[in-house]
Amino acid sequence: MRVDQVRRFNRFYTRRIGALRGGLLGSELSLPEARVLYEIAQSREPTSTQLARELDLDLGYLSRLLQWLRKRGLVRARASPEDARRSLLSLTELGRQAFSVLDSRSREEVAGMLGKLPGAAQARLVEAMKTVERLLGEQKKRPRIALRASRPGDLGWVVHRHGALYGQEYGYDERFEALVAGIVAKFVQGFDPARERCWIAEVDGEAVGSVFLVRQSKLAAKLRLLLVEPEARGLGIGRRLVEECIGFARAKGYRKLVLWTQSDLDAARAIYRDAGFSLIRTEKHSSFGLKLTGEYWSLTL
Image (tube, rainbow, N blue to C red; front, side, top):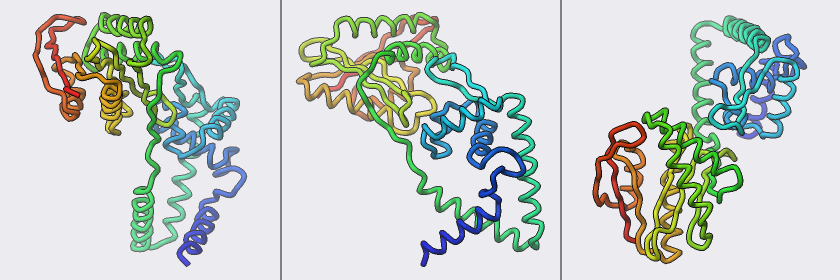
């Protein structure tokens, strides 16, 4: 009975808002195409991965929609200056005009629908819609998080993202990026697959984080280059990366895991503390164009 009622409501509402018409609101756009335009207009140059996550669309299907919209001159893409493998999407002038027309017509149609109801009924309808949105929104699919070994191209991304993010968020200069490049180069040149590892974190197939575990001595390993992109923070990815390092180090027979960080990296320090690391000593230094306090942390395995 409940299933039938929901299906009946779906049929009623899609018919009521004209979702089954060939062109939405008198345009040449279908409902999915119009929704893609809307999300791009409301976002700040989203990637296709971010759009697919927001709209809950298959990436292949979304790619075909974007291809059609680009062919019509409504959407453009440019390579991200932070990661050339990502394309940033935006509306062209023609796309903004098309969206403006659709947005105006949609507002007029909804206003006309509400205008046929008395004030009390309008309030009941809006409240009922809020209830539906709240109840179904609680079941929204969580992003798919995965950790994997690095692949060709990932290590360049690690160097680039460290340089860009630490510059933007902490004011570190290019010497920090050079330090990271040196760490990565040394890791590759002396890589011991039996006792060392690099993990890349992904959200819905897009790289958003990294961490390295390198051999320091026969009994000690070092955790290096922990990074999580701003849009992926709050999902527990940093903690998962650190836990993966700890588990790997224990499995390989290390007795101690150490790391070096800075006192201003509060989020990372909280992760290390929660994972059981202890602050061993601090050291003031001038690096990357700043006066910093380096911290040495250790975990007995």
